[in-house]
Length: 206
Ligand SMILES: C[S@@+](CC[C@H](N)C(=O)[O-])C[C@H]1O[C@@H](n2cnc3c(N)ncnc32)[C@H](O)[C@@H]1O
Image (cartoon, rainbow, N blue to C red; front, side, top):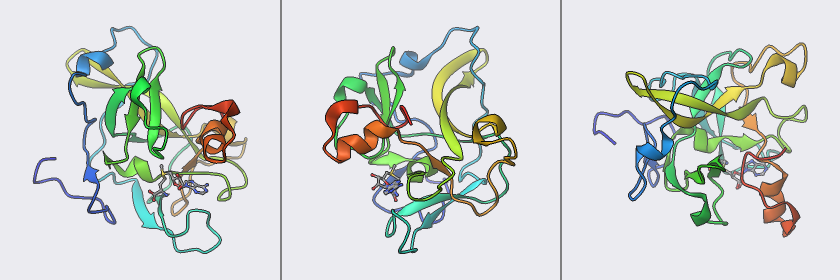
């Protein structure tokens, strides 16, 4: 991280803040290059810290992640809008640490995942909707692209506000002050309650 980078409020001291994906050797960004044309949205990297969100310690006893943190909207976020990239360490999915609570599959065909246990950005604080928002998630992970140089694109995972259709007809997106929640997928929770029947990664399934 360049020394001039301003850390987001409430960023933990023991986690490295990233402004770009961490790609340790032998992987290179070539693994993420996508030849055009593609139908994925092209996202311009947002400023850091991300002005749309805030990491907030959870102190409500009834919140299932009480004592941890969550990610909250600092302003109204319209349906389908991009919020933030999911950053962390890129690694082959075959090396996924089954105990990681911050691992997200980037692409099954490319066999790549992103783990934000030791380094990441604000997106690592997004909680699962279960026990928090009875209506369901208000955001989701989506595949997208970033233009790294003129005409060159790389794969990323972004967090997007649910579309009005998915969130219900009257959805206005995410209100200022609301917690941003996704679905980690049943597999995430099954793996943690000893049910191995649906062993998927965070973000798969619902
Ligand atoms: C990706 S982290 C989310 C950020 C985490 N709350 C933190 O402060 O670092 C995933 C972990 O958050 C907690 N968590 C997220 N959503 C939860 C929920 N709906 N109920 C209980 N714990 C949750 C669990 O400990 C889970 O392993």
